Amino acid sequence: RVVMGGTALPPRGDFATLTDEDVAFFREVLEGTRAGDDSGSRDTAKTSSSSSSVRKVRVDAGSLASANEDWMKKYRGRSTVLLLPSTTAEVSAVLKHCNERRLAVVPQGGNTGLVGGGVPVHDEVIVNLRSLNAVVSIDESAGVVVAEAGVVLEDLESYANAHNLTIPLDLGAKGKCQIGGNVSTNAGGLRLVRYGSLRGTVLGLEIVLADGRVLDLLKTLRKDNTGYDLKQLFIGAEGTLGIITKVALVAPPKPNAVGVLFAGCSSFKNAVAAMRLAKQILGGSLSAFEFLDRASLEVVLRELKGTSDPLPLHKSPFYVVCEVAETGGEEASAARKKARRRLETFAALLSRRGLVTASLVGKNEKQAFALWNLRERVSLALKHAGATYKYDLSLPTESMYDLVDALRARVARRVTEGDEFSETNSEKKRRFDFSSVSVMGYGHLGDGNLHLNVSSPTGYHPALLKLIEPFVYEFTANARGSVSAEHGVGAMKPNELSYSKPENAIEIMRGVKTMLDPRGILNPYKVLPASTPPRARL
Image 1 (cartoon, rainbow, N blue to C red):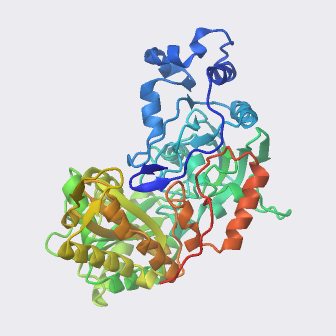
Image 2 (image 1 turned 60 degrees about the vertical axis):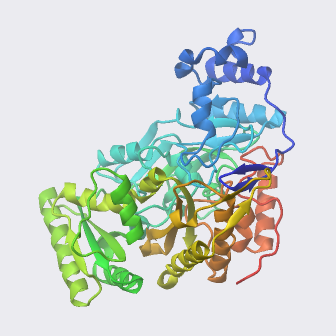
Image 3 (image 1 turned 180 degrees about the vertical axis):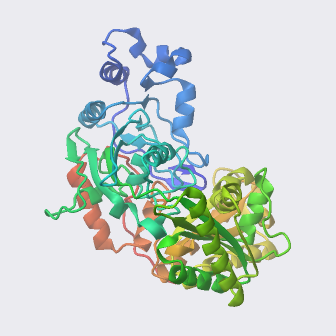
């Protein structure tokens, strides 16, 4: 079994092994190179890395190194080919061939996922969608944009902004993640409070099925009540049922201005109360309500240059970040003033009710951006800090921080008691220093999504993983929460799926997988567990 970041992954399935003939076929389909051209050989191509920059079939070490590994450096496959199709027809031809040959495939977007869903587990063929990067159309009147799957989210937002529209999704990885991957993982992000989830804002999809057939569900209608809504099967399926090649998405009017409030809270209870009040007072102008604990803020301040504590005289155990967006016919300057006044009035109310210890409203766009970055860049700061075990959970909002407290207490007890771990592949024993471990929580308070992070500067370690799991999942199941709020299941959590779904639901999912991908070539080892063991509740 492959072990990545302390996680045991399944053994290689009964799939074919890539041959030079397969590579030659891919070159002919994607590059027009005929069989017999010696560029079809993997051995020859590996010595020609300089030409790989213009090729759509990559076998050079540099291209494969980045495509085989996730950005957290936790999951690493050993694929020997990276394909870069640029049309739906090319994706179709590739999948038809792979299905006939029973070559396993991993669809890949911007490779910004956090659960290993977009990289190979073994030697799967990597099909990266970054060359499908055109915005197909935009309808300003209807507020709909159609884009190919490889369009980067930030680029799509810029394109929509130029037409006075916005994209109803905002993520910390927006500069690299792709809209097809966002939809395939049902990414949540920072704007869910205002715009809802992608399940509601995606109007249509074009998908290539495992056998190469193209399923055209690319409608831009707001209403279509004609039986089963098949596109929903592919939203959040993580490329296990088909490869998304085009997306039709609702594009709401672009806000004239946004305002950001950063405030400290003496307790998590007060942070939750502030969120409830924001929904009541700010109403439709509220676009995001986030929280982070002091430990999260400190890792940002320590690891990222140019950051500073906005409330240095009032250090608090918790902080909330509230964003409002103003729309309408006002000039931008007037809208910014309106947003700022709205937040200043709200901050004063929070103070009068004793819900915040101190607060700061961004006085201009630059300061508002800096305040927002303190929350948005926690994940990046943690990457700089070292190895991180990341958990993305849906829990009852009122009590979701209880899990952070409980896990922090477990780590503290282990520091006191000490621990020794004996490696299975070695007779040597080595101690793990639990005193260097930090447990922190942040997330989307407005929709009950906790990002629990365990930072381990000395690296991943089985003893630490054993302390965290299955405790985190059992706690979540006991609270009737979800083990994946927005990151997906990927390679990290297939065996934990039964903490959130009953066995009969998982069996129905298997049936859907078998129907759409009977040979099992699409993103194997991801999402579905090999078996469904019964789970005990706490």
